[in-house]
Length: 145
Image (cartoon, rainbow, N blue to C red; front, side, top):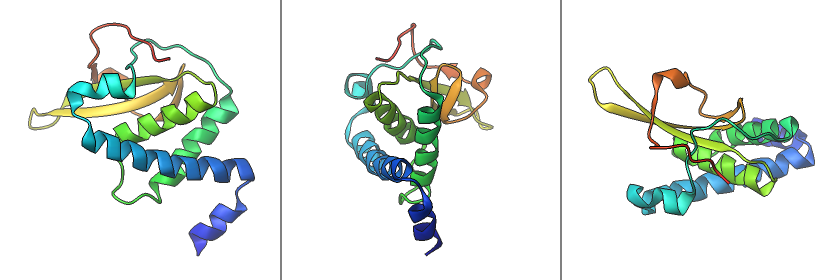
C-alpha cells in the first residue's frame, strides 16, 4: 500500500507522466528484444554526440522522476537503453529535443560494457555516468530530432 499511497499523493501531471513512463519503458524493452541491433538506428532514431538542445527544466525533471518511478514498478529491471528511449519519447511528445548517447568501456576482464544515457543540453535525464570513461559508438556528429 505505500506505493499506492505515494502514487495517489502525486499531482495529476506526475501521475500521468509516471503511467506514461511505465508503458513506454515496457514498450521499449519489447522493441529492443525484437529488433536486431543493426536496425536500431533506423527503428529508434539517431544517436547523438553533440551537446545541444534546451527545454523546460521542470518538464525535463518531471520526465526524469517519472522514469525513476517507473523503474521501481516495472518487472525485470529495465537496463539503460529502454530507459533512455522511453524518456526520449516522452520528451519528444512534449516538444523537447534530447540527445541519446551510447558508449562502451572495458570491464575488469577486458570485455566491452555498453551504456546508454539521455541528456537535454547538459541536463541529465537517464543513465547518469562519467561520460569521459566511455567511447561513444557513433562515427560522426548526429543529432536527434
